[in-house]
Image: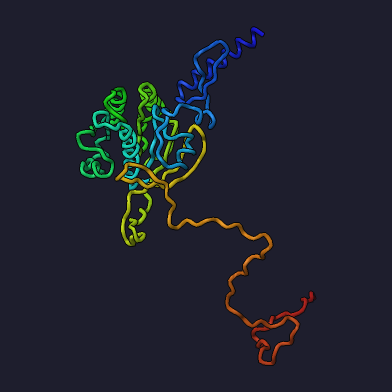
Length: 330
């Protein structure tokens, strides 16, 4: 019995250490005679965690797939499949940051946002447009600290130092491609800094492919068609509504995949899940119905094989075979 108790205590200690390194969100399992809980993965574990551990996006489907929302104290990857989707990925990260700032009802409690980008990305995409940030995300210019780092090493250092400060609601690090320096060790350091302060770090990666990182959650974000503006008399045709994003879950602690179309309402600073106009409800195929016939082609008159050829259809002497019967030797 003593040996089993020792082995069980060792297993609990290993689980605790693995959970600390990976930064998974908890289901509380107390080891025998211990007060410190053990963290474990799982959907039930995520749903049983404290409500303050997640940032709810407001889209029920996405929040349910993540078992509560986006983790606060963790590194979250936001991938843009192509370079043209870099703006959508950055906008999604700013929308999540706006949700964090919205929780501070009074202006003095609304903390700033630190946005870090590399110099090559800034030269291609440009600097943030202050009036647009204020109008769309409710982020005034004096609450945004934008840093254009000359090298990736400098950008990573700034992100680590900014994540330690309590003056920021979130840290957004925007990087292009798949640089070798942004490896598992670098992302583990960023994830650890986010865990220590309970503040998210959003890693926006433009024109990159997914690779192993320490981020517990990864999104693939691209732009979606905007829904026409609605009026009292119905939808206003040929109009452009609020920004929309196609968000696919590439990685999460619950391991539940999903793809959602979210609309960002800048008036109330909230997400809403919408259904694309081209989507339709699926109807099951009938079980006793034959398949549809294939499309018909050109009708051609064919002669029966047993019918005698017409006089005019006889082949000429030149067209007849030279040896219609078996050849004789000798």
